[in-house]
Image (cartoon, rainbow, N blue to C red; front, side, top):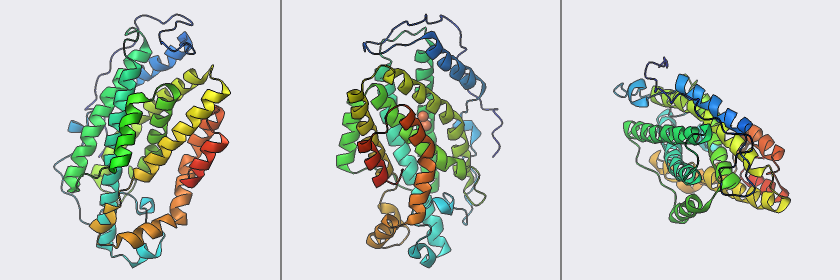
Length: 325
Ligand SMILES: [Fe+2]
Ligand SMILES: [Fe+2]
């Protein structure tokens, strides 16, 4: 599928009132939102107006799924590189990768719901004339389309909804209700960065289902703006943050990353592929290929966290446990 932009969503034109230098429109006393900060959001709004997609039109939802196409590139399967992978039939590999991609998409939907609520809470009664406010709402609209797109893709692949366990679901409920500032935007950035690296490979995978390639292309384009916005928000919110607050936020973001990374692939995917769940999970835990993929794909994120003082010894220990460092 070539994305032509024909199903483009026209974004709001930027312009309007320019936020004056050092105009503070947040309630947090440490927050300073300058004209330069708002310029970042203005550029993102211009980009959104030029290149945004409507997946309902852009994806060929009726095209049949070729039997031999994977759900994601085999190298991104949690079992790739293990003895169990070598023993599996081609049919099992196809089934496993389809369930894995749908599990990751379901985690994506779960996290996009958390994200939308956090961003909406953050922008509550902020200045509607600012580009920051308008981009935040544009991002929420993007996430809404993404979640519907992922839901349709999973339905098309015939994979049931995989959900996080009750404890993790409750933790997510607390996080979406309470997190703010760099803690909220840090969690958002982690989820978006991890997914972005995988989807850049999925959209190019020649033996990957077109429905996955197309949805990944749309997501990569629109999420690159979200990641820029999250980085900008984190820089702003930590500009005057003292070491104690940075340490607390750093740990909170790392715990968020732990939850996201460990929830991405549901254990039910192995049974769906006709595998022994216990053996599969043991092989995934010892899979050096998987660990190397995680470390490589987290390099950019770790560099940013270090630059903003959000990579502390405690948070680094958590990232090491999930092989992001
Ligand atoms: Fe998204
Ligand atoms: Fe996003």
